[in-house]
Length: 249
Image 1 (cartoon, rainbow, N blue to C red):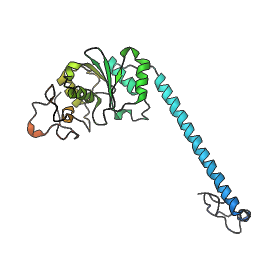
Image 2: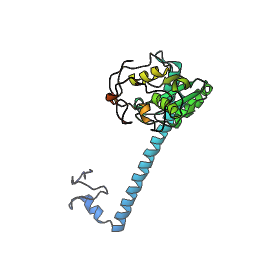
Image 3: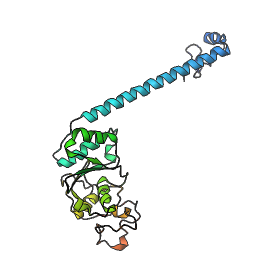
Image 4: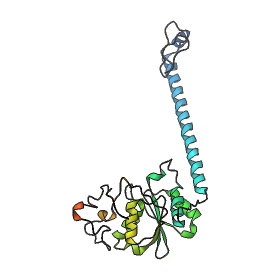
């Protein structure tokens, strides 16, 4: 809160609050009500203009950041396969503001040679980057799959829902971040190839089983990946539950 340098009284936003013996109060006392109202309106206009300038400055920063990300050359890593690199670079074409690891993007190479992108969160910048830097891959982008359905399992669910065996449709899968133990187990069970150097032993706190998301009328072309599990374990039940039981992979 502002304070008058002469009388040290606290002032309101429009500068009112001086003590009566303050020269500034005597100067303000000569203002008519209409003058005071006009002064308040002028200050409001100045505040609005300042907010607009700040908003425009933020828009320019976002535009420059987006342009830099879209123009950045794809990176590679010895830990990733070439398909992992595609997923990683496409995913990071969007400015996640430090939260990019909270979602995943997967790129699958189908048995017919086509490339399809399955992202937990789809952003148009990702498609723009893919078109600019991976035109030879002719990437097809699917809508976002949701927060807890890992991108790898989103791809598996996509084909299960269509009555197709994911392992026969997907030749190889690349992912923007290391594959978690549960996704690794499912991919191994289905015979889908992935980079063994791009995996993590860290369990995911939330994971959705794609079989548990199938409608009751859907008969999947491949049995549940834990088909030999004890039925009393309740694995995969509830559709949206977390899963953290230890597994052997």
